[in-house]
Amino acid sequence: MPGPRKLDPSSSPRALLGAELRHRREEAGLSQAELGAPLFVSGSFIGQLESGVRRMQMDQAEKFDEVLGADGFFVRNCAALKTSKYPEHFAEAAEAEARAEAIRQYAPQLVPGLLQTEAYARAVFRAYRPTAMESAIDELVTTRLERAQILADPTSPLLWVVLDEAVLRRVVAGPEAMAAALRHISVLMRGHRIVAQVLPFTEGAHAALTGPLKLMSFSDAPPLAYVDGLGIGRLEDDPATVRQYELTYDLVMASAVSPAASLALIESVAEEYEHEAERF
Image (cartoon, rainbow, N blue to C red; front, side, top):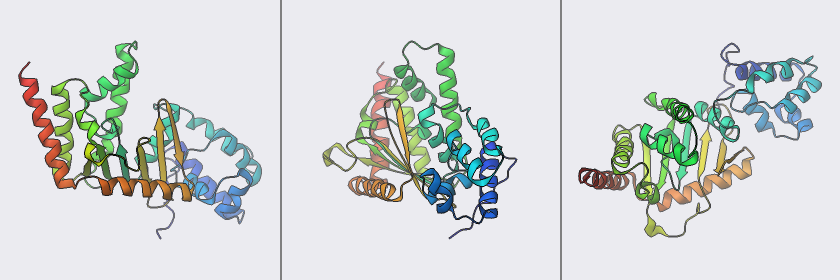
């Protein structure tokens, strides 16, 4: 197993907190599980805080100051973590996503955020916020496209997505935008940057009918699962729960068609949209 990641405390407030938490815990002679016990969290959760995968909350900071005799250090520095450009229910998941070694995702309705084009993302945000000012939509789109820059690295993170066929068939922003959105996915597939599969309608009932799922794994911390709904999201770190979600994803992946067949389907549907766009 890899050793703890050497965090640069100057790189971010969260890295500072993680490095200091590890230092003070080890100085106190406590295991991760022993430090987690007074907070009613697992040793895995403490490890995720120390590695910078999870965001420390203020009530946790207060308890760390108390247990470790840190004289308010964690409370003072935890305040710097409050600001995020992401919605509160997604902020911690987005930060974990940026540190993940591998991301596996099932998308039942929409192209995943990491794979959205500008036109597609703009249409999605406008549908969510029909009365928002254009400047607010611009900001949301910019943030989403910036988040997708983690794919600029040619190899990491590994991104493996299973797209329900509904993702291909739901026309978001019109046929031209849909063609571009699907071509973007096919380019990434052909460039061996992502792995994608399509779960066809013909599969009927499957293991993830209840909604989307994202799994994240890390080189130096236990895996996480993220599930979300309308304006809500939950990051799961309980090992048994994460294993159950991993099984769900594996079942969905097994029900999907192969990556090669999925690429052919995605490009075929993109071509249909292109022909439709030419008629108008």
